[in-house]
Image (cartoon, rainbow, N blue to C red; front, side, top):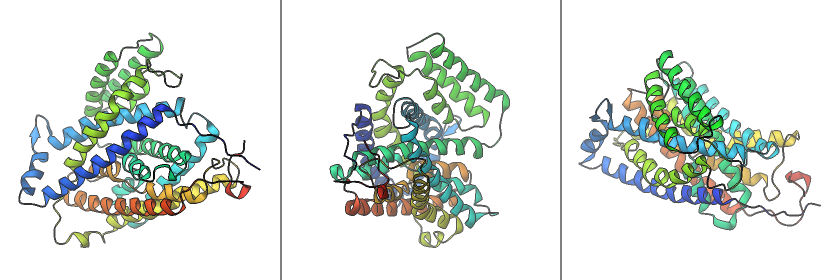
Length: 401
């Protein structure tokens, strides 16, 4: 018989979870505001503003390539923390969300590919692979203490791994023309900054931020999406493996960036990328293979892939569920994984560059699938999300003390 063990959430995780939850509410408000303005008499001017140029790039591109690099920097810092001292630092604990995330990427991509293989919209295969961590955590937070703490950790770990997968997809599949010289320059900067931390033990953030800005420019000129520079910078900034070490440069920067990213950068991204003018034929566009691939990928492929991959690796003994979770919890987490939004919209802009009609149709499909996934996950976990209590057996594949 297993006994229930305590599950302690670190202060860093609690801070991260609270910021993501509050940020999700702001994102929802900005999305509603943007859609509302776009479909009034001010709509054309509102859309035109984001497409107007400020120097070499449009306002939209400055937001998507510039501000979002800071968002990806935060992702890099979070990934490094999770790998070194977080949920992904213990191989036995990490395997479940890792395999679940893989299922949550492969299944949606497979559905989209089957519907769009050989067509002009095949490039959208990466769109339903992504999970919006802010929205997913925001929905989960609505349930409060009625869900087990380890489900929060599982979903965050899954979404972080999902983000890593999206970053790899962006770097490998959505690079247009590659400039080897600029890319080598960017990688040389990565090596230099890595040496600053490892060899010279530089703990000041200033040289890393200056080097990161140079790396961003080199990456932009290389043809690889500039936001990748943010992720790489997050990995080379020194991190202390001592839990809750406030003196670690990585920890300090992550603490500094949480609120600006959640309450400024992502809301601005939402305003710039959700200004859709909804025409009378918007519903017809949802029947296209691309839109169907996105909606089925997020709404069906995500929960199916997450559950099947997690269940399979548990059934063959590679890993097991935490003590207070059961498979109904994993199904609910899979549904929330279908909230694509920010990352899906980001990949849409890369997949269909220069094709505004296709981008708008994809965004509409993302909205519908994300809303469906959020409501489905919320109601499912409200019904079946209570923590396990009492005795446990092998059928639930729980950890034992």
